Length: 256
Length: 297
Image 1 (cartoon, chains in turn purple, green):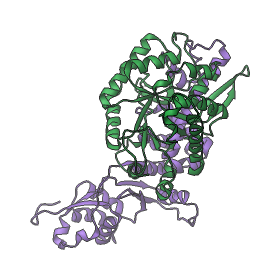
Image 2: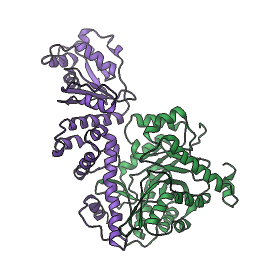
Image 3: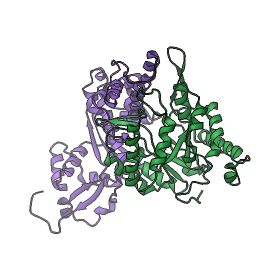
Image 4: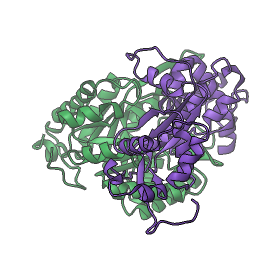
């Protein structure tokens, strides 16, 4: 019974299941349509909560149609819907009708990152004073543990600015149409979305790969000649993006 | 509001669903509310603001945790991972009330995010009872089972919903959450008399009430088809049915469910206070059962 019921909910072209008790066929069809509608509308609502700006950018009708197609290829696998829909950004990037809004998939990636950070496990951050006791030599070989909720969203569109404008419509709508890297993290109660200066995303990526600070900085400096490693570290610390520093006991001669 | 004692629901006034948009207002203004209810699955993330707010609110109010995804009415084995998540949540928050649904919501690895109906037969009864036994044993506590809103029935059903639910309560020892709106919606949809449904319902096992709003449509023959949408005030007919049964479950607290088009907190609480007024008027009136709860109200 359940398989046939589910199949008929998912595929509206299928006839109303024959095992229903309603004697009148038009009544049965109308009543069963409630389940077909609930399934789609409930998931549209759930994803509208996770992807509010994405929904705003395309409007209610388009978003509902998008989700109806999305759920056919990616139905929820778990009752924990706050974790559902992580595949939506990738789906949007392949969804032909959304091609007219080329930054839509990136905004959705930002919102997926926001949702992950919002529900991430609690985890502490270092204060900027953590750099205080370190010599320049020690700092150079230090490895950095980033905050567990931290995520990077790199975009060829001003993704953080677009998102911010829709979250706070009162803000000055002047935005320069340039590529943006966004850092998403929740060091404490609030999720932060920060548009990064040039080089920061590469720096964070290198640190996340386990490179020491000097090695990470030199990677960045190949492309961003005026990158200021000290400023970047202080900024990351002040945002709460760094959870720990691992400085070897003795200056090591190994490359890092 | 600091006098809550875990495990006791005997004198709880009516409560409302806890919505994210009301978190701050509740903590800032500490309104009079009997308790708050949350959907378990919304608090199954690892951390973050939902848990921070729930922790804070829970220190001031009694709590009900209401699961919507356990698939108790499903034919497949219960999802142990989901049971584990539920246990963790219940252990952490120690709610006064915990409930789930007489419904199924998952099949073949797909979660449909809806409360789907099942046939009422001796074999589905066995299955549901075994799922409830398993749930209660795993969680180490009793649960309350909620009657569903249904839009269709099954030709193979041989038991009425009231008989089915009464047998579950008798066999598993679980308590019941009587959703009066669901009883009304299902009865109207099955073209039965809701008062008769409630007359036959095992009210002695009811330990919580739900009240909510519904939407009304018509089928092609012009007959009413009601949809349980939790997006409006409680209907006058449902208030009347509630007043008729509430004194027969004298210690069961009542929850107002309003999950869509959620109003301001004050409007939501006004519905809960209305339920308190109904309780006060019927539980103080003379009667062998009502007399017990009358004085406290």
